[in-house]
Image (tube, rainbow, N blue to C red; front, side, top):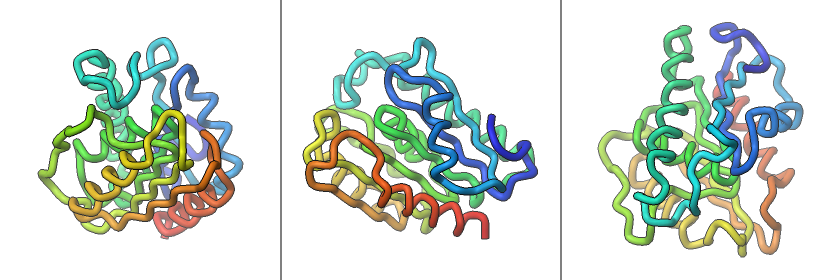
Length: 201
């Protein structure tokens, strides 16, 4: 955890790290988000990766990693709610493998969140996956940003993911950046800062 003590920040951001990384790695993004009134929760993947293969591999080869990772994200949401934080003040944010996990965890537990931010990610599953449709995001702002092309994340999966969030009632912004590379741009960070400002009220 970083930032304000849980229950005393205006917003809780659940930050989900990428492959071969750690909570410390994703938390290096905190200064760029530019807020000192936020609690940052960053779950850790065992061995540094949430699941072993690519996010579009057959689901069975990535289990129990996917299930355990989603449970870790949901546990952070539950921890925040137990501390008196409403879902409207909870933002899920991830990069790369962590973005895939954060977005998929949101779809498995839809609510009116403060936001969902997917930096270089898409919903998990092989081609033809039918993601859950029960429940509604009720206008939750969702941001998907990715390079086009990206060696890890096909642009078509980003588009599919954006369409699925829209179908579930989210207010989606998708940005594909020509030849940006597998990184987080200043434009993406600016959008995330605006989302946190809105969630903080």
